[in-house]
Length: 417
Image 1 (spheres, rainbow, N blue to C red):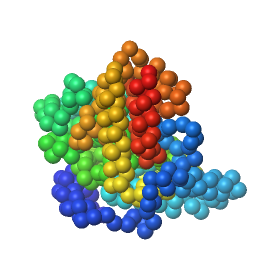
Image 2 (image 1 turned 135 degrees about the vertical axis):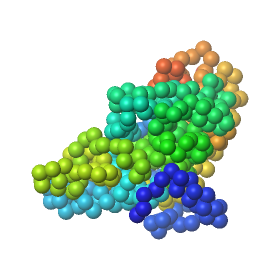
Image 3 (image 1 turned 90 degrees about the vertical axis):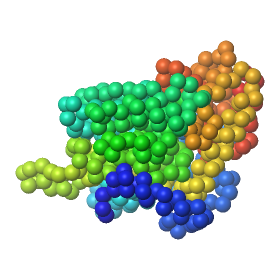
Image 4 (image 1 turned 180 degrees about the horizontal axis):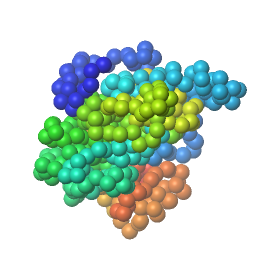
């Protein structure tokens, strides 16, 4: 399959959107759609006595994923060597193909990882830039991005995209980032949805605004499985995500996608066990040329039963419908913002507009620390989270395991504080 540039992705996204507007279709793999949200919730073994509003941190496995993990585990326990030799290549290819269909990118461009953090490390530590080149990132990005860039040795600058997250807008975000680009800027490193504030970046508009010589890299973990847009529609050059958050995939799984232009700037960081790399070593040399996804995938033995069950996670989302998932997440997040907005003493930090927000909702409660609020909610059997940043907010993320009643119960519990 031909390499895709950022321009290709942006151009083809318009046509894809037009087709999608014609109406829903069956899941790509022919799976029967889950018809109701009650049926979706029944796929999870979550404690029914608790309201789980922090699945975005570490998600439970739905039934098909649990079954696949158990199937592979039992086979490995019976005869690990035989099962590995007989199935590793086919099962790994199946996972890469399933991820590629979901992201709408070529399968050979995908690397498999264990987490977002691993993917960011492989991407930014693997950059090969000139001494005068620089990477532009933001003040809002998480530790994993900042630290991977710091230890890469690259020249790095940071830009602030908004002062008040609640008032963030597409024009402000795109304008500030574009003005920060200089003649030295070679790579822009951003995060799709900020876990610090819940602000969603307009990635497609950013991609369109950047000079073509600048490569756009995206940490997509809080958009993957919550937003309907594919990587093709985002128009970026590299996309990194763990799969054990909004996608409800196996814990310890992730993906790294990079188009041809991006991969020309990358070198593998961890030796791969792919055929070309291993074969070159056997022949007394090393693999050369632009690395594909297999060469960028760290080698060694993995938690295979989890990695191989990732295909079922993508199939599970296809059975629901990615547009339905995004609409559900948006509806619940909007309801949560509305109901929290009516609670005295609550200060919302996430913007309401769909263009700059997704599933995460961050807020403060007057006179209470974020940790105190999360602890008080836990005592009421409502699972929340604290933003892991210097400025700490309470965050909730209603997803496909939740109902409108869950949202109302959480808002009432917060009001009772």
